[in-house]
Length: 182
Length: 239
Image (tube, rainbow over all chains, first blue to last red; front, side, top):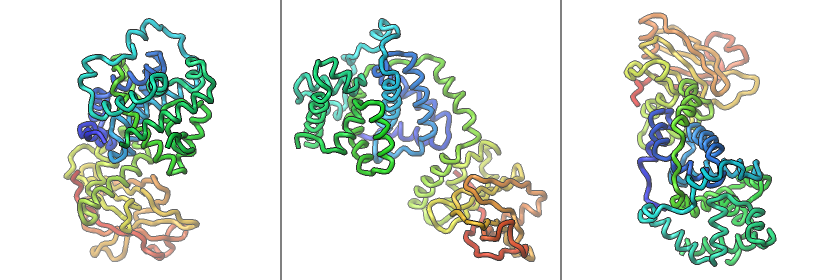
């Protein structure tokens, strides 16, 4: 487990008690990162903001479900955002219609070099384990998790049948799990 | 292990995001009852979440928080029942471990009801009685506010009764017999009554409260006739 983020935990406890000031502070602290997550998957700022709003409303309603023993606050909230964004992306099936030029500006996909210097230990460990995968398979995992590509989309992108993609995914994830448990 | 078994594979792909819309729905439904799947999903969420850190942040439009605030506003006053139940359970469990006795539990419960929003912030005016049988989740709460002179009984989580009703009673040495405060049954049901006089308030403060199981329509005798299931006394509420 990464070091506990007691500040966010404290804010979530406040939100669970209906404290709007805590909610505002939680929003301030996490909304940019979480919008980044949604934009990457949905490729539209407009839709991503709708999803972010729904996700934060869910955080407001469900903060009392949060359990620090299971996940960090950021993991918990990012999971809510990702699930919502993925559902929306699957519902819309084909997306890229919006202003792609804006998208390129707001989500180039590459981490800012400064941010890379401040990576935490568990990020380094996961990236290290990802580097252990063959380059193509590593790319598939990243495209799936960060950009929300479905098996079907991955199959089209890599020119392989879906069954092959599924096998690759399962092998890669098993390898990743083994590496992380070492 | 070179490949993932069924549950692991499903959990991993669910978290990774590669399932179809239909498959996602199936997994989301199944995890509710399938504990192993649920735990596997949580484990994969933890494994992959560090990747989130590598995503570039995008600042939301300035008006997004205003929209959110408008959305949560009504909830400031009417806390949804489910959320309230969960809060009560969580709080009660937390305090039970930290303190012994109902006093601490009762005190911790007041903030939970959102009660302070409706009656002001002077906590010294607020008193609460937790009517339960020692379980985590109180069956009933009785709250009294000496500022607004209101007494509110809330059914929080009483066990369901078939063809019977719960009746709440005030019991005091200063009264010849118990006084009925009303019938409250379904979780979330509330009954509010004004406290008419100073002497009635004094009576309330020093009384005990009991909940009995009675025939539909209430006790035929005007005093508890069925078994008393829950009891409690008011304590000052300090968060």
